[in-house]
View 1 (cartoon, rainbow, N blue to C red):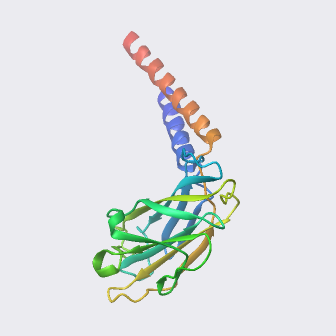
View 2: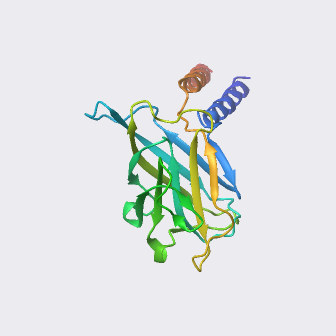
View 3: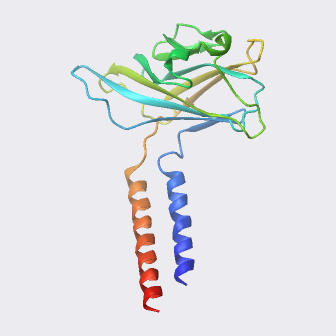
Length: 216
């Protein structure tokens, strides 16, 4: 009976962990899954008028089916006006150049207030390789430090934007340009509290079972 309860609680904890803060901020296009997350607070700085947020765009290409061989460009918009720096990127930040502005079918276009675009420099300027639709794709993460006026971060439902451009081996764009609204999300404290409570109960049951086995 105790074992059954332990298994049930383990399943509950797994479900809670899978849903913590990440239910509303994913977009799926051509099988690839895009998420946009941040810590929920600004980085420390000495500028009283501006704040900087570390924002991560995650791209899961395990089920990508868009026909591209390389992920060439990505762009994010989390404020109506912002500047940015690339904190980390696939293969290192040296494999990417950062431009203010958005992304169109030809690549980073340098226009569009608030957008920050990363242009791939590896593989003859094609970015990083992806695996096309065989279940053995790659998870990529781009982390931007985005600076904006105080209170200007987009936190509403689908208020932020992401863009991505894939190209074929010959460098021409594959499929359509990914361009979607997305919710910038943080882990929810309430969900973490539920998860920790479940894990604590699991530990208590495990200790009780160990004590009962020792007594027997």
